[in-house]
Length: 226
Image (cartoon, rainbow, N blue to C red; front, side, top):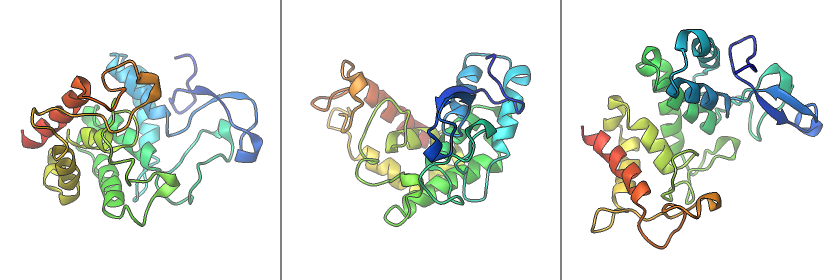
């Protein structure tokens, strides 16, 4: 927590090569595809919001554009940005900003959250044509995967299912129905994609049902009917 910039955003030690716009050395800074997660972790850990979190949340929220959150970095990282058009939203940064703001009362009902959700659902609606910053919503995105920490159908739907207004959105319902259709006769789910580092866990294999993946899917499905 000693590494926090003037905007209240916590920094990570990162090395960005010069040909990507960085300094080519270890530098404490932040990217919008990681900074929200540090703030979210601190918030979930019960760290004082007013003193340690609010300023950073306000700064990151101010970066919102009409089409979602753009690829953004702190000044320490120079001109670095991901492989996409400058004016595009970064789908992953937008998703984790929605995750962060959905846990904060002052932002839960905000237009920023609604706008971020709409931006990603618009990408789903136009998944054949639009994939900013190389974030596709194709075959791999639609595979069931746990834990819900990256940009995939379980992660996105789990995040959005916390909001009542999205439950009648046809785009969101399409994603939910796709997950429902993959439930077996016993009500369980089997992973369709895995993270190799989790191969020792029940969700780290694709041969049999996963209690944890099933929990994630049933929890988000239950939210859509509450």
